[in-house]
Amino acid sequence: MNHATPNRSFYTAVAALLLACFLPAPFTNFFAGRLGELTIPLSAPLHKLSMIVRAVPERLDPEDPRLVELEIEVGRLRARNAQIETQAAVMAEQLDRLQGLRAIDPSFRYITASRVAESAGGKSALFKVGLGSLSGVPVGAFALYQGYQLVGRVSEVSPRSATITPITARAYGPITALVISEDGAFEKSVRCSLEPVGDGTFTGDVAKDEEHEAPAVRVGQRVVYHDTDLGQLNTGPLIGVIESVVPKDKAPPLWNTIVVRPRFRLSDVGVVDLRIPRRSDGGGN
Picture 1: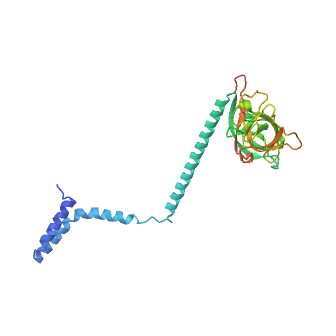
Picture 2: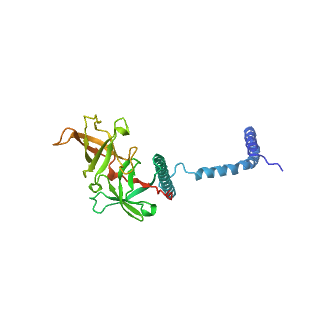
Picture 3: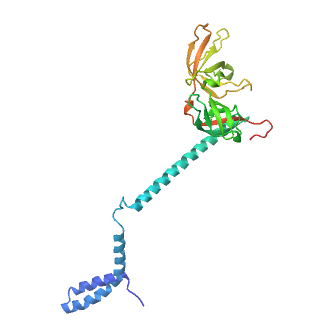
């Protein structure tokens, strides 16, 4: 049995209404009942549409508890996603740096450790990192920042932590250093000994041998650690840059006193790379 479609019923009803305008009243009453039957196929879809329109508010209520809960959850997920992306970027940067250090000098391995505690009293400038002997950290290992700035060395170790003595602490003692020439030539470097002052800087005396045309030192030159035991053939970790050069008091003019300051404020360093010598028997990683 064929049923009239809504469109066909609608047009039929319109046509019937137009005809009813020209018919007498008795015929109009007769057609009124028939027209009601023709509009039945349209009534159900229109009723459903009206229910849907009434169910959707014109504007979401910002105080609706469900909406507030969803907004809080979305904010939490966005913050968590940003945190994960930041951590991933930091880890990728650390991996690139450690791989670069290994390529420069494969006789050492490097592990990254975070600063976890300050020394008792806070006056000695010593601090602890969260890796120790269980991770292979030995006493004497150098601590570097960004892979090149010398921060200090391990002075004490426990299974899960290590104490770092910063190079700027008086307890570190004298440091054998090289002032790198302005053109970077290692053979033109000037050797000197630096003493930590205690205020974050070092002082040292540099000979100015005019007779043998020794290179002069100037403000801004890099000063690096010099390892006399290993017969250093390239530049060691950075100690700092020359901040001032003045003639040494009560001494011949062949001597200058330099003040050296690290590139970074070492007390603010939160993460270091520990440089650990590889074992000669091949058992190290």
